[in-house]
Picture 1: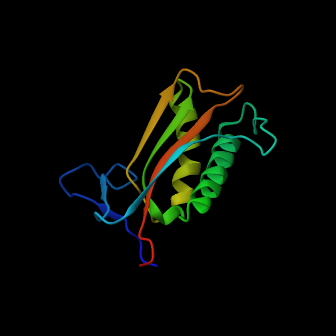
Picture 2: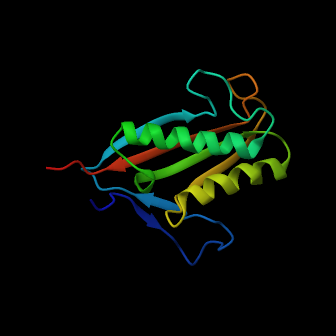
Picture 3: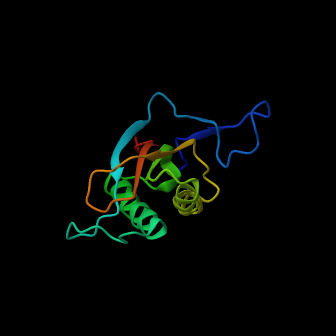
Length: 137
């Protein structure tokens, strides 16, 4: 099924960004709003304590599970917000590289933010996402 998402780029904006600057979906698309995907194991424990890369990987894994449960895939994501509990740019980049690699050629508009603290004990990474799908008629 073709994607409902159209990524928008502009040659008038910086080419330094590793993502499209905007995305659109048609009016008849079904939007899917995901809760922040956290680095939690099935038993509720935090994965990869102290490890930004491992927590980003687990957060991506959980995001993919949530997308699948909603009838979507990574190519249906319209935008993301990646939250990293750190004031160090290197930690943000570590998490970002994992998320960016997971999306491959589907370089959705994204925001990367350093935050003070996240909701679970030892949590360092969280990924928010919005997706859109065209349901079969």
